[in-house]
Length: 275
Image (cartoon, rainbow, N blue to C red; front, side, top):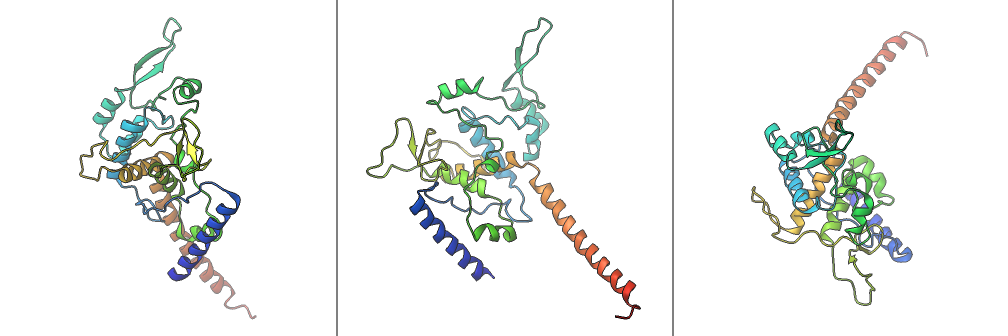
């Protein structure tokens, strides 16, 4: 079975490469498939990796990208204590009001608040980023992924592959390259053959080796930063993934037992009826 799957995957890769070459489809390079702890029907999140990914987001990505669908209190599932979450939320300011005079005001955030956007509006975000407003990252791991052609999308049904978004984010973040000779790079853009919408984008390479320090001894490399933040963004997009998989497993067991009972009941009811 594994040999058949490998053969079909190789065929799909070949078709994908030839299709990209003939139709100039993007991305030029397919996302690099990674091994994730949350992959498969029994996958779970690695809390240590999620905490590292959150650190990468805070120290590198939060200056431009928001998480407006994530509340500070949601971080408790990453292993943070209530005291840590309260202290973390207090580092941010959110708009509240109106007050008794009808005016809006700023106050320190509390655990019930969501992460505030780094810019007051989309126009301000675009003006500060060469005309391209950075997208919110809350659902990015579900909203962005490269299509996997036939027969891989069929194989994915049986292997429960659902990490296309995380693979794409990882590949994009570590995939910046020098533009090939003869390529006309637009001013203010950066060459990245893993980008879905073209071969260059306005966001520069956000990471460099050694730019962030990990307390758990994990490698401080572009590869590790990209993996960790991709896993974190998978969690922000689907925080209840583990519960969903656990529920699905229970449902499958129930259906198998129920199907067996129905079959035995049918045999019992019709046993005395001549055929």
